Each structure stands twice: as C-alpha cells, then as structure tokens.
Image (tube, rainbow, N blue to C red; front, top):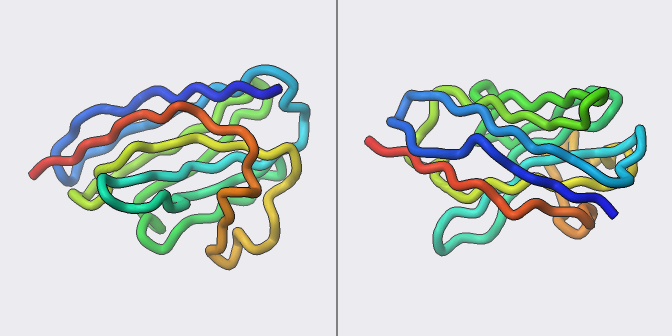
Length: 129
C-alpha cells in the first residue's frame, strides 16, 4: 500500500505563489508516476501535471509556464510550485500516484484518473482578487 499526504495549500492573492508538497510513504518502490489533480467547486477533477522517476514533466495547458512539478526520488516527495496564480486556480489539489512510469499520453495532455490507484486527501488552494 501507498499513502500520500499533501501540504502547503492556503489562501493567496492573485499573482502570488504557493508551493505544494506531497509525501509518499509505504511500498511505492523506485519507479513510479505521480501527478497533481485539482477540483474546483461544482466542477469535475482535472489533471494539472504529472512526472515520473525518469523526471519528464507534463503539464495541462492551463498551467503551462506558471506551474512547475518536481520530484525528489530520494525522499519520495512530490512538489508543485505555483506562480502567477489566478482566480481560476482556486480548487482542492490532490496528489496521485501509480507504480509505473507515466503513460506516453501524458505528454499529449491526456490523463486518466483511473491510471492512479493511490490518492491523497487533498489540500485547498484559494486565490482571491
């Protein structure tokens, strides 16, 4: 089993920055794909970014150039540096993991929630004007 715990959410003004962290524990192994998803009130959950232990990041168009995903494989920590935050970035942010390298379709901007069997509880990000 793998456990994921997010932290770093909070409230920030538009244009500001936040850095989210996801700590993975349990039997995650040495080869895996981790991602960030988000769900805004009244909307479905959407992928934000993913990265695997090979280090290749993939981003949704809505965050490209503003968000940076990274992974510390020695500590099994996943990060999401969010800059130039917009009101529409307000959402619950979830960390997810699968015990394989990221599927090639992630590079095409396509993610499937069902590819990720492990999920954290989420951390709230609120951006205000």
